[in-house]
Length: 552
Image (cartoon, rainbow, N blue to C red; front, side, top):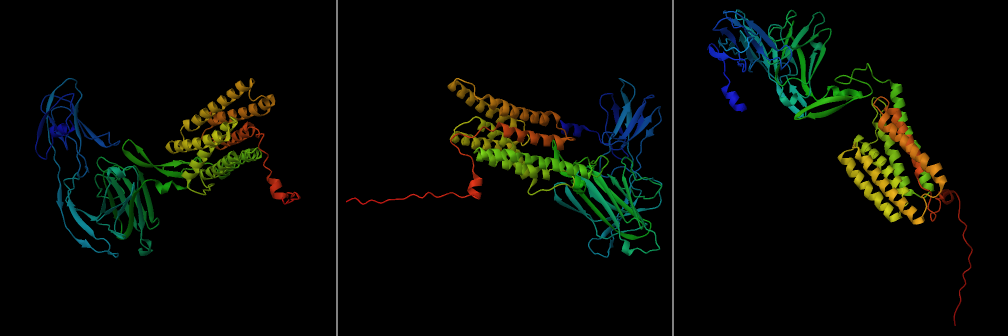
């Protein structure tokens, strides 16, 4: 269907009138237009360009009466199709009209070579007279200098345009650099940097270098009275002088088109032009993270700012957090993990050595993960961020899993089998979706089913409630459950990006406190872990007399 419509599309050629009939359902498209109504007062309007591409990229001319009217563009796009739409304000009317186009252009190529001091690249001179869209009555020839440009694609959204290191810009001829932006480059940031060679300048001379970056067509007249714009596109202007020898321009998400950088100076001088496309601006700086994102089939780079910083490159500090607040957030999130020391000591005292090792694993990686996850300058990473995040999430969920399974009071082989199988399944789930809801909810529900089943079995077998001692419920289970529920409510309902540093710290404290209360007492056959007696004391040897008898 698309190929058929393209084949049926009428094409307007130069100096050849095209006769068409306008209806209210299908407007015609042409490359360049001059319309003339053949009937009575028809009230046609002609629009050159398209407002859907960019705001201000169209010219509209109303045609009334029997006289011909035209729409003209001063500097039309080069090597591209120009959309023309003819409309009428009269409803349900068929209007015949004639339309034609006329573009005056004379191009005379003069190939010449100019050697510069570096000898790396040479410049090609192209002389033009009456460029497309320029005034036809201009008698003076228009000339421009077009240096060679090499395109170096380094990585995804990483592109560099290589121009002559020392580019000679003259005052009589504009220098136009052609830069082709493909659709794959439009997801990055177009960076233009100008440097004026100050060591070669004389102290008593004022140098001014004016530049204009425009898409689809170049600007061949660079003066202060003319704006940096073509017929349908607004450009970007830059200037360097002897007082300010550097200039930088960044264009996020540039159009996929051929861009033209026009340069002209008041006095002849050498300059350095650096052109490249990068995914993010200065790699988002210390307060942001550069990420490659994909929407449908469009790949683009963007900065994810932290600590209240904003802007394309995370350089706007109007709402940024102060250093004291960043330090307070880092200390709260890291030091709150030390509340897992009491659960580790209690687990060791009661003979739960595997559980104590898991709690220590959780405390260690949670501390350093939050130290590495901080925005701004209060950051310390002992290893890769992704590794720290995986170990922190894994340790948190496995700690909850082993605590609830331990409360079921199963036999050691069954308990350790559940520990191992649960840890492997949780690791797989973390690798698939690290922030998934069921990564924590699934193990908790399954462990609760195991615990409740074990308690019901013991209660039915003993014909009494389990645990049988009311002090166990009042002094341990109920406070532990209340502490865990408070932590879950704060984590789910109260935690936001603005209060994350203290609400998440409360979550650490509540979960660690609940483990102290919920861990079951020591098994009767397991003696306390007397590590102090083994290290700081000695064991008395028994003085036993061994008698040997000889049988005869």
